Image 1 (tube, rainbow, N blue to C red):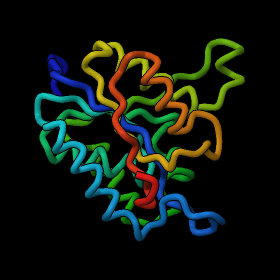
Image 2: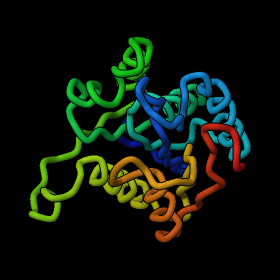
Image 3: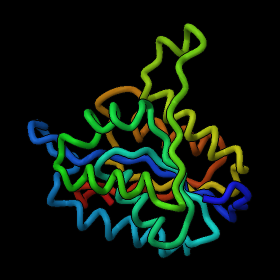
Image 4: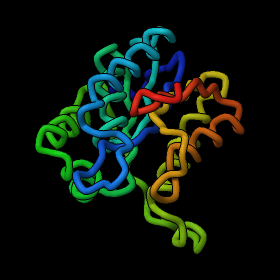
Length: 194
């Protein structure tokens, strides 16, 4: 990726991971991957996302990697934000699904138009007390808004409920709207409540 890339718009994404095999209540089951991919692609088509744009997201299996792949396929540049070094991150956020997701993660991370950023160690006591995932989400949001809130378009795959832990998609949806970014209608991973 060229360092002098000047982005037209920033497409900022947050979304659910593919469900773990032992998840008691389905949220984003693997069989919904195709439908969610189509819904995210349609949202990007509506917004005419393309090569002049920057994508910002995490790297988890499911929504993050689907979004990253779709944006790279459109010629966009990608900034991938991880709360841990890649070899640590994949253990909890990619590899539980299957080896295909690991290969997709590596393909996205090493793409010519992609850059990977790893969350720095916490400096303050407040940062040390916060979840690394929450800190990573807020870091991504800060970076996205650094291009100007008017340029930011937030896309999310979210079931509309509280997350499994801090720093979830619902929190991001509220934060981006409060900051003046444009948050469209969430894509529901189960295809209902739309």
